[in-house]
Length: 360
Image (tube, rainbow, N blue to C red):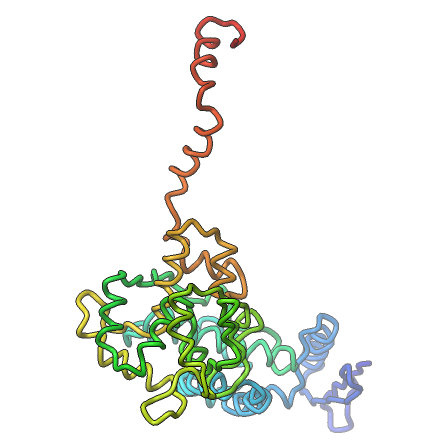
């Protein structure tokens, strides 16, 4: 419902009701201006792009506070990461109304971040966070559209995972302090993430069945995803290492005092020993041992689905995006597959082509 009427003072009063039934009004000197305003507001209601006039005043800072309240149900580590991202977003856009953030401004911000030397992956993470926050603002009808899109994204980048050699893995093992050696084995030969290894309990290790089924991550939090709880088979040699670590303990990995190892302790040990191993990248982490585990599976002939399940990825796409370059050359494997079927027949086929007859 909308109306435009002239007031006794000569001004024009434009009124309309939004989808929630609330009335909004403005006064104009000219009738044409009032009609234009009414047309724009009612059209936005019809097209689903309507934003309440009061909501248009909400700043990025204010919306980030509101958004974080709803995001607080996630794991503490996930919320901490979101706050780090939001700090950079607030720094750039904080005082602006949400509706003032435009795609060109997002592109300019990302260009400045690139000039600061921030990596492509981190700029992608910041862009994804801004897009997440703005999309929720769209759903809450605080803005008509999300200024973030593929056109503003810096791209995720596709850095290839560094795969340590067997010699490098074993040298890391030899240089590690004794309490950390089992952790390295769980990373390199089971593919456990740092928090999963530190959270591993004796009841998660099936010594008879020679398998590990992660159930929690450090200290006793839910796993990252449902797929993270997939069972991983382990060899007899690793079972022999784990057996004494599963006796009379609450956790498999403990320090010299018998307390549960924390991820920060494992990463600190990795920083201590990685520089002593020739050829390892400066930033080599415990998580990079998963890449070594993936390379072992691929080298053994495992297909994408097997590798996905052993690494407990949520989708095969993640596996292919990360490790696709490790599979054998597809051209050569294609030739081999076709040759296997054609072998022994090719001579007769070639003869028939030359003579114009049928092959024997």
